[in-house]
Image 1 (spheres, rainbow, N blue to C red):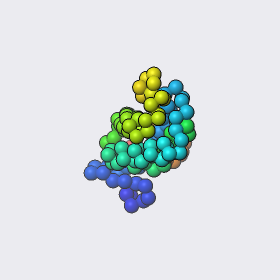
Image 2: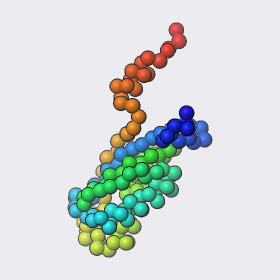
Image 3: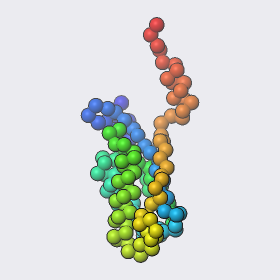
Image 4: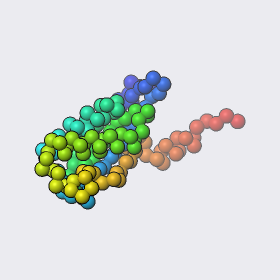
Length: 138
């Protein structure tokens, strides 16, 4: 089963977990240009690697970024998000001093909230039917 593409194995589990994450800048300020987003992707890839996760896809606009992350079940999404936002905020401030004007009020790059959605696998109605159709012993 674990030989199918995208399926990963751990010590005691077989899994395929993906999350779509969206981070918005504080006050929706237009902060990023292409150079910033390129560096942001590198930073976030490194953070994901520390969590044994994979940043599958990354892109953004001036006031937000989208990430598609493949992660193991031992990783809490909230811990991954906190690390991604914290490390990227700190490194971007260090490497791009001109971004400091966007930190002026709250001294942080990102809004306190985020979006996380699970993605992949069959549609929910297909999964509902599959579970309902299991052969239950009598």
